[in-house]
Amino acid sequence: QRRVRGMVCSIGLEGSANKIGVGIVRDGEVLSNPRHTYCAPTGHGFLPRHTALHHRDHVLNLVKQAIQEAGIEVSELDCVSYTKGPGMGAPLVSTAVVARTLAQLWNIPLIPVNHCIAHIEMGRQVTGADNPTVLYVSGGNTQVISYMNQRYMIFGETLDIAVGNCLDRFARVLKLSNDPCPGYNIEQLAKEGEKFIELPYCVKGMDVSFSGLLSYIEGSANKMLTAGECTKADLCYSLQETVFAMLVEITERAMAHSRSKQVLVVGGVGCNLRLQEMLQIMADERGASLCATDDRYCIDNGAMIAHTGNLMFKHDMKTSIEKSGITQRFRTDEV
Image (cartoon, rainbow, N blue to C red):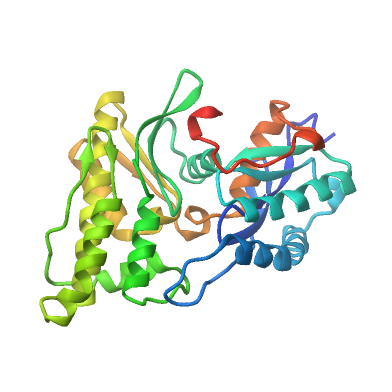
C-alpha cells in the first residue's frame, strides 16, 4: 500500500571517508541521521585501515540508533542504500559489507549510490534549489557542476588535490586539532587574522590547482612564524581568502556559461561561513541566489545516501549482491 502511494522509505549508509553515518529518509523527509567521526591524532591524517576499523566498531550501533530515532519498524524499509564511491577503499568496503548483509537479512533491494550525486541531491532537497550551478567542495573532491542532457556535467575541477585536503594538510603544519575537523579549526582561527599574505593563485581556465599553493605555504609558514612576520591566524586567513577566491571565480564563470540564477554549495567545506559569504556576494552581483546548508547535510551523512537511494529505487536502479562492489574512483559525470 505504501508503494502504491509512491512513498518509499530508505536506509542509507555512508562511510567513504572518516565519518560513518546512517540515515533514514521517507520521500524526502529525514527521519533520522546519526553519525560518528574518526578523529586522528593532532598532526596526522586519517589512515584507511584505522578509519575502516572505526566504521566497523560503530556502524551497527548507528543502524540501531537510526531505526529507533526514526520510530519505524524494519518492515517499513523498502531498500538499503550505500556509498559505492568515490572514497577511500577500506572504509567503503567496511560499509558496503554491512549494507549487503542488511539487504539480505531484511530481504530488500540494495541501491549503490554515487557519493557526489548524493551531496547534490540532498542539497537540492534541503534548500529547494531547482537547477543550480553546483560548487562541490570537500576533503576528497572539488568540482563545479551543472545538470544538462540528463546527467551532471563537470564544468571545472581540481587538477590535483581537493580544497579540503589542502586545508586539512595545512592544519597539520600548524598542529591544529582534528576535533571536530581541521577545516573548522582553520575557519575559526582565520577570523582572528589581520594581515593578508599573498599566496600563489592558480586558476587554469575552468580548473584550479592547490598543490603548488600548499607546497609554498608549507615551506614558508614556519619561517614566517619564527621571524615574527605573521601569526597562525594571518596564515589561515590568507589561505582561506586565496583558495575561496579561486573557487568563486570558476563558479561564476560556470554560472555565466549556463546562464544560471542559482548556486548551490555542497560538501564538507561548504559549511564554511566565509566561503558562503563570498559566494553570496558574487551571487548578489549577478542577480542570483545562493543555496547552502549547515553541517547536518554539508558534512558526509547517511541521510544523503538514503535520499538518493530513494530516488534511484523509484527508477528501479538497484543492484545484485554479486555486483554490489565499491569503486574508489566514481566520477560525478559517470552516473
